[in-house]
Image (cartoon, rainbow, N blue to C red; front, side):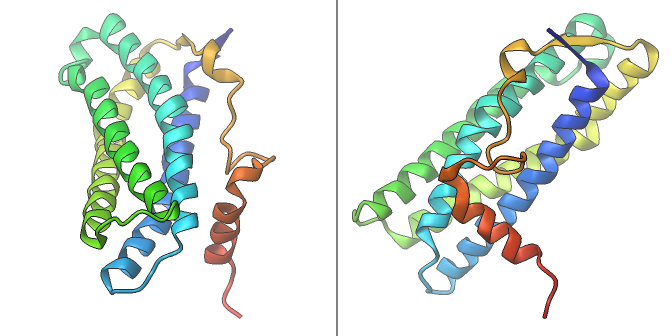
Length: 189
């Protein structure tokens, strides 16, 4: 099944919006840890499971399909795209390292607070920087290509995978994360 490229780009931008929301929760937890408080490690584990399950496994591969199409169809717009898959791999590795830290803490292992803070800050900053670059540069190149000629991209292997937090049916393993999102977005009493 083919996906209309404009629809896919809308989904990718929505994913970025959702990831920014989740990254803010992670950033808040890092700030708690930096101030000497114990953050909600179970929430951090859910956040890391989410970002390593959905964005790393679905969002980034969809982007890679789009970038491949751009390179093939519009090489004049494709300068600097060679690093995108490596960036995605680096972000995934940083996410996995942080997820390992948090899983170890939740299992009772000793993990230095500074290591957790450093890994979490590095991950948040790297992913935010990457998304900003994509929106400021890469997505605009793709929009230029699509303005000139509508496209369809084959994302068949990803179409059936829904966002486990932001779709209509939230997976049970992300209830704490959803609860935190609702609490943070509720109007002040």
